[in-house]
Length: 222
Image (tube, rainbow, N blue to C red; front, side):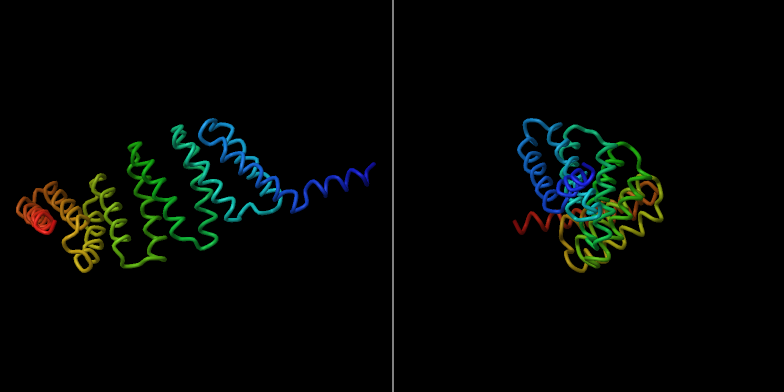
């Protein structure tokens, strides 16, 4: 009986059987995701458990399942669970060198903290997002947008020195690659707001005028 039981256990848990069970639960999760989200999450958890059983706990498949769970939990506004699964996915993406996917996780976590009024935590994760993006896409308009997001976090905290540092980093790219873009206008507007808060009205107006110039240019070239 012991030999038979051991054989049954090995057969039940061999790689082919586990892979088939993972695929089954992923298919069921996809089918349930609209009509029965709780069942969908249970199937995703079952798939995760089988992947861990097969010693694939750090595989990209596990990371992608975490992101699928996040989609459902967002709709249910289960923010603590959303953050947990984003952190799990980020950890795996980072291990596999998928910097942009890891950055996306940090962006989402930062947005949640920002929405909940936790500006300090939001700034922390936006900072991590920028660090990941700098490894992958340095000196591009995309990274400039991230610099602006971080700068806005500092601006909300009243940390004007670091806010200006991030806005200047963004402008170095934006003024070079897209001087008349709406993104550049947003950065100018943020700098205007920063100087207004500091009482530098003349400098604030200078940057407001740059925003107006871009808006006029956009109107002329439509």
